[in-house]
Image (cartoon, rainbow, N blue to C red; front, side):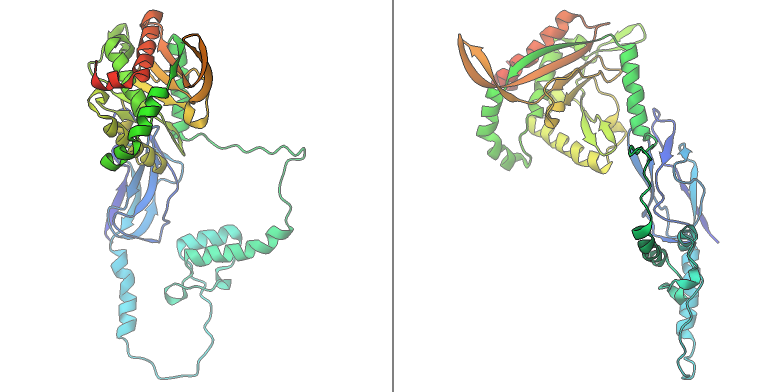
Length: 399
């Protein structure tokens, strides 16, 4: 027997522990090298744990839902079991064929794989009543699942659906590690920061006209659609350069001024809100920003964002407008000191030169930590963003 251990992958310094999700294999089942065995959920990302070698999963040390740390043993793989399992087959193929005899009906095997046995035991099914399709009539996991479905079907038709007596059912599920961490950080932000929000409105007509004129050629040239978020990122960088305190953070009794612009962009995922970071956003073109945001969005849906991509950031942008939000007061993402909230662009009547006209307007909200950012700097920073968005040519030319 040759045993290879399956270990928890190395977690980052900011992540002390993680939670195991569902095992994709059960003891006794064959595994291939690099096949994903289980996923490990941290408070930031989900990490996949591949099989380090081919063989048979001989033991699961940590079950579903267990809390683990870096380097812990999760399971063991018998790398020699695969070769041993093939030996009887080879011997059977080499043995001379027996003399012909009258055919007899094959008896159903009562031998089930560990995974199949567990399923059948839970459903109260005798393995001897299940037709095995595995080697030598062995009952496989698939056979067991099929038998369980067949057995459950008649009962399901007659069994009453369990509901509460007053017709008000409830379901209790534990928070995911990510959701619990988000809740913790939001409470931390509200308890430690003196959060205040200032609002302004921006006429999006100039950006909409610019986008309409160049969106086809932009996509053809760069292979990505020209959205609106990249303009908001550029406008934020313009304001942060002018008012560095909005890009700063608090460390104890010190104010840390950051000489770089790492902009976090909030992205929705099946597991909750995540904020991947655009590093050195001031050095990125509109195309670079759009490509990174599109990539973040795809990988957020698949849980493929890395810990490094979700760490740090000096300022954040949250776009509730994509879900139809008209106005909100975003909560600061610590240790940052400010966050910009973007909302849905809607046509509204506005006054220009004494005349009422219809314009595509967007309400902006800047939440800031009043401990280090005065109202003056916050308001002027938001005005700088508004001016950059309403005159995008100047913003893009840096004048």
